[in-house]
Length: 328
Image (cartoon, rainbow, N blue to C red; front, top):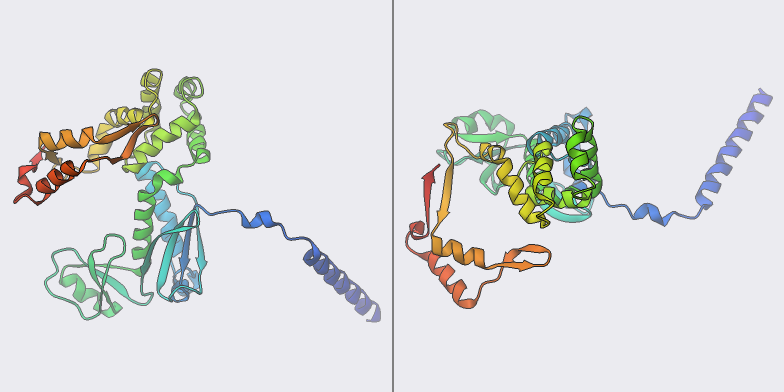
């Protein structure tokens, strides 16, 4: 007994000494320099949504949305870091992109969100609010009100579903920023396993990986899928020797994947509804796009008289003077 006790005390002393040495080591400041691509901060009242033991399914929903975005857009979304934040209101969450807040919202962990799809016949007994992703009118209701809300043509969503939908829309909006050089190289390397010929034809002899990244980012800014990377690279192989502007290359790719783009917006009968501008207005806007040595800028430069003319178009009785809907 005495021997075992002595050995135990010696082992405990060694552990204590090791912990003291660890604390004495100088702190590695570099460990604080990392920034997560995507981060979700939640108030303490929402922590249960992450806890599987308490029925929380937020982690599963985020995994599902990452898979769906890969299918829809061809973008591999980086892992989302989830942290609780005591400085937030209990029901509030914020979505951060590279350490900066880009979206926020409120959800009630114990209630359901009934969203007015435009067909709702009467208000509900609950807390009126706005759905955070699309700002649609909605109500927070008790779970036992689900059936009634459904009968009144409301769309009823779980709180984790509300948050996941908001996160999905944020990812789609900032998809171009999430596509880094490293992620672009991963996409190219993955394609090279099955279609090395097209990759070798383009990279690095015609374009560098960074230039391909700019073209893909151009497409993602307009939520154009980049999943068909073979067609993207084949198009770049055809035109990149003569065209160097990433925006122009992006437009050539758009034409090459036109079916993919239109498939997103056709109705169930395969009709495509479009909005056309009056030729004079369209010409004025096209001529106002600022051109620089880096390509077309995203903003328009309009003179005061042109802005006044644009206002005239906008407020004209019937937007029909400058736009009309048609089938295509």
